[in-house]
Length: 156
Image (cartoon, rainbow, N blue to C red; front, side, top):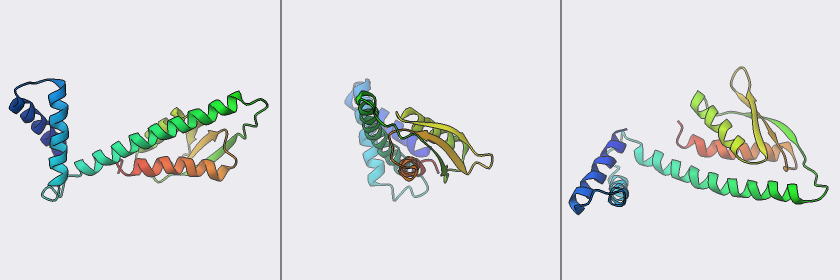
């Protein structure tokens, strides 16, 4: 949290130094402030702001790519005559332990075309999901586990 506040102060300082407080100068100041925090993060050992922010940016890039790939795959299935959908229901062991983590995972896989989170076991160790267009259950599990890997990087 201190890293976010420090970055906001650096962005505001940059905008004041430039002499124009606008969205453009605040974004530029935020990027410059983030770069400074990343360079000097060894001084701020206790704050994981840079690590979490980079992990979140990596997740967003991963999610955008997976979303495009899933949309193309489902569109191909829908447009192909007599396509075999290969629906599967899988139980995926969870490594995320928080309610927020499990909820975000379920929401993210449900946003991707072709997969739907169906629920979580009572002991919160398994996520049940339905997937189409995937040849076998292991591939469906691996796809969901890849999403969970990216989420674990910033939802610890």
